[in-house]
Image 1 (cartoon, rainbow, N blue to C red):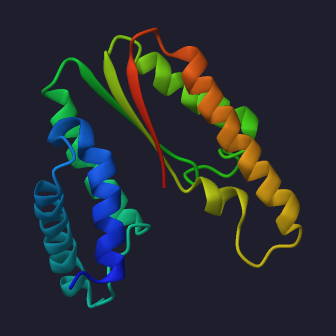
Image 2 (image 1 turned 135 degrees about the vertical axis):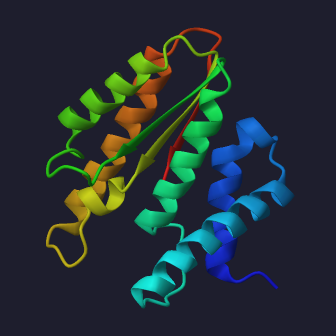
Length: 165
């Protein structure tokens, strides 16, 4: 039986690697096993033994690096990863627009592309903060902005997968 964290990781990997694997769940399981095994080995050396979730930065970075390497071998498919929590104000609509535009410019020549946006919700809606309704509204507006910007700024006929984690 698949544990909930593993199932969430498989959903993430299947969505991320779908353009290259064709939604093959068996390959997603193999990719998951490889990433988890390598991260478990690193954590065992460090003395930490917690379960790896799909939101774990090390897991996301390992998956993004692997996907970027695989996309480098295919000229028709591009990849851009933006971590919204990497900078202090990166998740604000102005900076989010700038980061996404830089990524879309990089992917302009590709017929197929994948844009991965991570940590947008934690950057805009931090836990234990006041004004949760306002922050949720800002998060929803930023999601809409990024979706519409991607649709408006990609060339006609291009297939762009926009993933939010």
